[in-house]
Amino acid sequence: MTEYPVILNPEGRFPGLIVVDHAGIATPDRFGALGLEEHWHATHHFCDLGVEPLARALADRLDAPVVLGTVSRLVLDLNRWLEDPRSIAVQVEGTPIPGNRTLTPEARALRQEAIFWPYHEAVGVLWARVTARHADPVFLTLHSCTRVFDGIRRPWDAGTIWNENPALSRPLLEALGHDAGLRLGDNQPYSGRGGIYTVDRHTHGSGLRACGIEISNDLLETPRDTAGWAARLAAALETCVGERERA
Image (cartoon, rainbow, N blue to C red):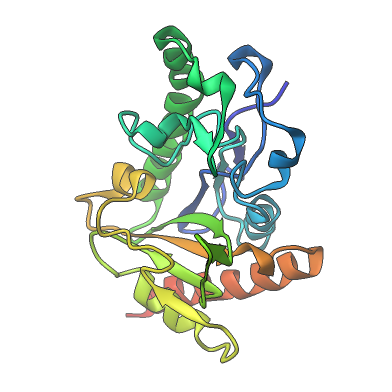
C-alpha cells in the first residue's frame, strides 16, 4: 500500500524544509479509477517528472527533511485551494477524466480527508520543528515543468516562484547563476504573486524565507541529470543558508 505522504529525514540537520507536492503517480484503489489510458501516467499531468529522485538526492546531500506528495495530482492537487475547480481536474488537454467528472461530494471529501489534510499536517509539523530549531530557516517547494506549454517554448531551464518577498528567491537565483550556461527566471515560468498554495499556507505572514523552484523536466530525464541538479541545487541552498549565518 502506498504511504502518503512520504517523509524523509524528519530529524535532518539542514536548516530548512523541502516540500514536493507532485512527486508521485499513485492512484489508490480506494478513490476509484480515473479512467484515463495508460500513456497519461508518463506525462507531466500525472506528476512533476523527475522531482522525486531529485528530492531524495537532496535529502541525502543536505541531510534535509523532505515531504513527498506521492498521490497523483489528478487524484487531488496538493498545491491548490480546495475550492479551486482544478483541485480535482475533470479533463486533461481536452480529454475527460471519467472518474473525476462523476465524483460525488462524499467521494471528494474522502480524497481531501485522506490525502490533502494529512499531507499539509505533515508539512506543518515538520516546518514547526525546523523553525523551532533554526533562527533563519528556508522553505522550498520543488517542482518540474514542461519545456513547451500551449505550443510556446519556455526559455528557462529553471525559475523561482514567490509571492510575499524574494528573500529566498534572489540569493537562490544568484547562487544558481554562477553556472553561466543556465537560463534562469524570476517568477518564471509563471508568477507566484497571485498566490502559491503550499508556500502561502505554511509561510505567509511569517517573514521567513520561502519560494518554489521549477526545473524544466527535460533536464531531469536521466540519473546523470538528477545527480547534476542535486549537486547544483544543494550547493546553492547551502550558499543561501551560509550567507545568512555569516551576516
